[in-house]
Amino acid sequence: MLLGKLTAQEVASNKPTRILFVFDASKSMSAKFEGTTRMDGAKQLLYKFIDSLSKNKNYQFALRMYGHKTKYPPGNCKESELVVPFIPNNLAAIKQKVSEAKPTGITPIEHSLTQSANDFKDRNSLNIVIIITDGIEECGGDPCKARQKLLDKGIVLKPFIIGIGLTPKQIKTFECVGTFFNFENDSTFSTISNLIKQQQNPNKSSAQVNLLDNKSLPTETNVNLTFYDSYTGAYKYNYIHTLNSSDRPDTLKLDESITYKVVAHTIPPVQSKDSKLYSGIHNIIPIDAPQGFLTINRGDGPYNNNARVKCVIRKGKDMNTVHVQELNTTEKYITGVYDIEILTLPRILLSQNLIEQSKTKTLEIPNAGQLTIRCLEAGDGAILVKRGNKLEWVCNLNTQTVQTYNLQPGEYVTVWRAKTLRGSIYTIEKKFSIRSDNQTVVEFFK
Image: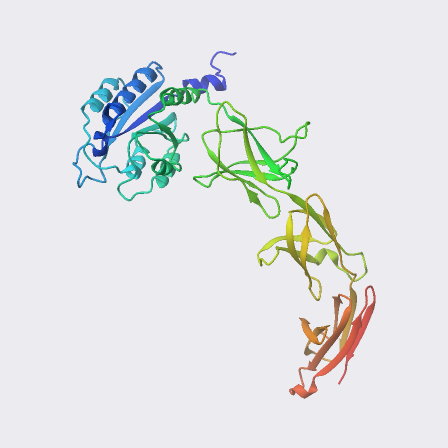
C-alpha cells in the first residue's frame, strides 16, 4: 500500500462513532423491579455501557434526559435536555448526571427523539442512539415521525430501545422507531455492544428474494426489484432478479440497518411484507409472484394498422388499467382473471380471461377491412355497428368528402347529413358489411 492511501476498511475504522444515551427519568422509573427500582437498574446498565465501550478511543458519548425536572403530575412535555454534549473527557460528567437523576416527570418520546437529531455535530461519524426507558409516549406525540428526523441527520442505524418492564402492546409501539431489546434479557448488553462494534467495519447482510410460484417454489425470475426503506419510503436499491447457476435466487448484499419493503415490478406489481435483515444469517425475502403469459395476435392484413392498435389490460371487474400491450406480443402477468379491451374500431371487449401459472393464454382477433366513404360536400355523420337488435356507436365521421376507416368484420350502419341542409329529414342512412382484408365503398349524394 502506498503511503497516504487508506483502504475502505481503514477509512471506516477511523470514522468516529458517536453514541447518544437518551435516559428516561420519568416518575414511573421509581417502580420496583427485580429487588431494586427501574431507575437503579437503568443506571447500572448505562454505567456498564460506558465502562465497556469507552475502551475504544474512537467512541464519543453524550447524554440526553427527559422527565428529570418537572414533577408529575402535571409534568412538562417539552422537558428533554442534552445534559452532557459530545465533548472530550465527559465520561465522569455523564456518570455524575445519571447518578443524580431522580424519577420525576412525564415521558415525551417523540419530542426527545426529535431533539436528539440536533445533538450530533455532523454526518461525518457513525451516529447511534440508545434509549433506556420504561414507558411509552405520554404527550400525544408520534415517535414514528421522529425517526425521519434522525435519518435526516445521517443516523442510519435505527435507535436501540432498551425497555424495562414494558408489556407486549407497549413494545409494539416502538417497532417503527428502532430495534427493541428487553432489559430483562441477559444478552441485551452484549448484543447491542457487538452490533455497535460491527458498525465500525460495516458489513452488508446477505439476502435473497424468493419470487414464489403457485406451489410456493422460488421459480419466478427476470423481474425488476425495487427495495424501499419501509419507514421513509425512499428507494435504496434496484435490481433485475435472476437465478444463479443452481437455479436458485442469487445472493444480494444489503444494508442491514434498514427494514425493507420490496416491490417486484411484475404486471401488476406485487410486494413483500416489511423485511428486517439480521446479521450472521442468510436472509430470505419471500414474495408471492405466480405468473403466466398472454399473447394477443392479429395477422398482417392490408388494413390492420397493428402498430397503432393498443390492448388495455385490466384485472377482472377493476377499471384500473394494469398494462397496455401491443398486438402480436407476449407479456407475462400475475396469475388471475383479466378483462381485455382492444382499441380497434369498434373496440373489442374480451372478458374473464384466465391466466394460469406458466401457461400461455393466446387470443386471436380477425383482420380488419376498410370502409371508404365518399360525399359531394362536407357533412356530419357517424358509424354504428349492429349488436343483435341494437346499434352501438363506433365513431363520428369527419368533414372531408373522402374518408377511410379500418373496421373489424361485422354489419354496420352509417348516417350522414350535408352541412348545408338544416333539417334532420335530410339524414341519409346506409347499411354495409365489412369483411376481413376487403374494401367497402359507401357513397352519399344529394
